Image (cartoon, rainbow, N blue to C red; front, side, top):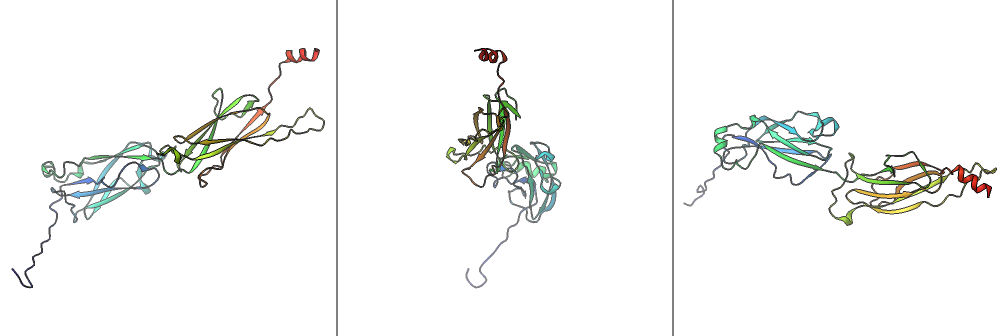
Length: 277
């Protein structure tokens, strides 16, 4: 057939809507905590086509993770867990600031035609529930914690000669441990500085102060988001522990720890014996 009117065009549209499904093809791997996740939904016919003329609401249950008030999964902006489908599609913004796994489950209202859905081969791969894992966000800061050799957290006072164990954690904006760096060479490096402001020697009439020594420096590198160092105390005074010169300058590292170091008590008996000689 030839001529100006020989072309035949046909428009195929979706059949009646059969069920709503979660469209997870675009969500690959763990999602960063604190970044809104656009959870997608689409309404399909028995052949798996999107019903572009469908409009309606679908409920979803959010489970897993902690309480929403404590950073657990919830609808961003305080909205209800309901998809508002328009033209056969919908997006529900989800916010979770914890490192956890979250399950999203559609309700019974997602099945619009149970008989057609059960008989549809294209719809069989879809499930009522989908799980999304949330991983730490970008490294924001270094946090320093101290523990005495006896296990006391954040000791305020030590005796000269004792040791303090220092732990530095890499955290994101929501204090999640950033332990998901895949390549060891990409782990952050920094210096731990330990300095002592000596106490005044009150036994001297001039109240002379011991000369201040330069800070001890320990070059540390994170491993799994954590670095540790044992620091020995020797001089009585105020011990300050802080971080400096991170290999990623944008990382916050202003945190510090201060511990009072007191002189060790001399044994009175040995003191008398020494004085008698």
